[in-house]
Each structure stands twice: as structure tokens, then as C-alpha cells.
Length: 112
Image (tube, rainbow, N blue to C red; front, side, top):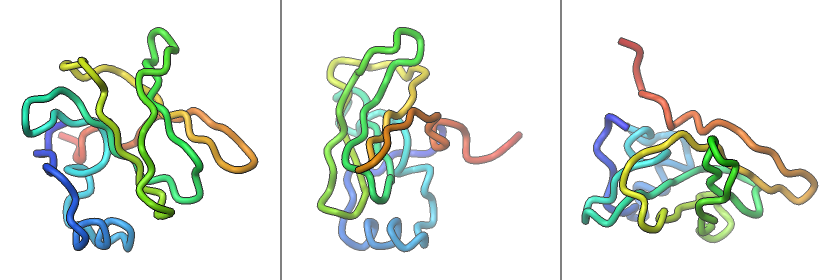
């Protein structure tokens, strides 16, 4: 979580993201502190998915169900009262399968 999170995605940012042209995808996807100080938000791009949930890895509990933006495969959700980043998985549901995976945008965008 080293990049500054975007306060919200306007249509040009969303288009750039969906067309793989966004200049700093790590500032959009993954877990970020909300700019308004209101806790954590997770964003994920999962084309073809029906739903995406955030799972706390330690407990296996569902923390949040992310909202889907139209049919684009972009999901976003606030994590309630949580203020500190934590290790999480994404549970992604497709029409014919459900998988749990590490969010690649949970990690730093560069190797030091």
C-alpha cells in the first residue's frame, strides 16, 4: 500500500483501467486507506465475475462483499470499521466456478 489511493474513479480513469492503459494501477486496485479517513477500501478487476468478497486470511471470515460496477468486472467496497491493513484473500465467483486467490495488488508495485 505504498501508492496514494484515488479518491474515486472518473470515467477516463475507469476506461484506462479497463483498457490496460492506467499509468499507476497499484494506486487504484488492492487495499487502500480512504482519502476521507473513513477506513479501508478494496478495489479489484475481475472480468466475467459475478461477485467478489474480501476474506480475512487468518480467520477465513468474509469481511466485505464488493459492489460490482455494471458489467465491466470492476468491484469496490468499503471494509466497515477496519482502519489497519490486514492479510486478505479474494473469493471470486464466476458463473461456473468459485476461487480464492491472493490479490496481486496487495503487494508493493516494485521490488527494492
